[in-house]
Image (cartoon, rainbow, N blue to C red; front, side, top):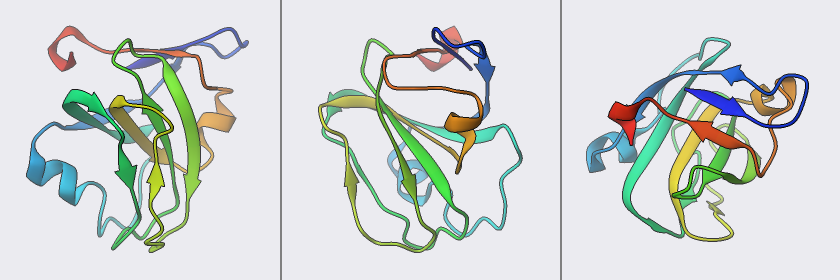
Length: 122
């Protein structure tokens, strides 16, 4: 997966696991003790709707991007380990991308950037 935008680092690459079934989405990155530098998880939903994520049983700090059906990033949020406070998308989203906390800042990825997915993930 590639995220493109207008910064000098506009082609950030992440190696992602896909969670596109209910059980996978519910389990997410829970109980993991670490996440490699450019790894993450992409949550895919059949239809856009308001998404809500929290960090129950999630041991590592993460950042999440909510993404529209047209694959533009709506917003990015940092999340604390084990925090059960829900973080909702500001508008309907079809995708959510979780990566290690700080990844989006490190690669200068911001709302409005486009996520390029391999055809099999669309």
